[in-house]
Image (tube, rainbow, N blue to C red; front, top):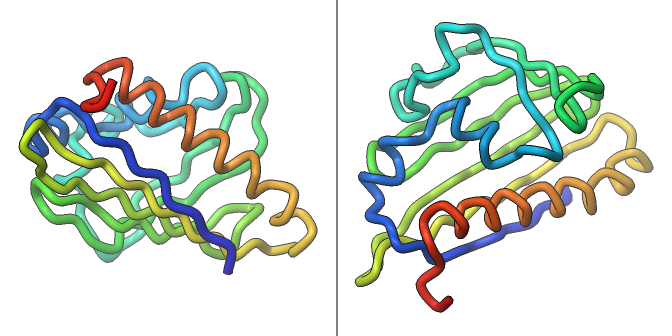
Length: 153
């Protein structure tokens, strides 16, 4: 299965980082490339308080914030306070979308790592989408660096 990992060292402690992670923050990371819908009850709820092991909700993926391009069914597989989560979901485009986000403490803050593994429904479409997924996650990490500051920058 195609996969990639993007890491960034930030000037923020892991507990402070995770205290702010909700769908509102996810959308702030994704903006302006993509926006994800969520029911009102889930928008500001901290990600690490979501129940694991069951389907949670469906999210419409909106390219440039307005053009629907996919529907993502959220399923949180694991969550560990101060450490991270593993989301194992599916969508119209992907039979499996696994996104693992972890934080590792450092002397100056933490390293945030996003590992994404995809099992697409149509191999050619997956091959075309993987560069776009990488672009979106590189963008997310640029947004995180602008919010928290990069350790080496």
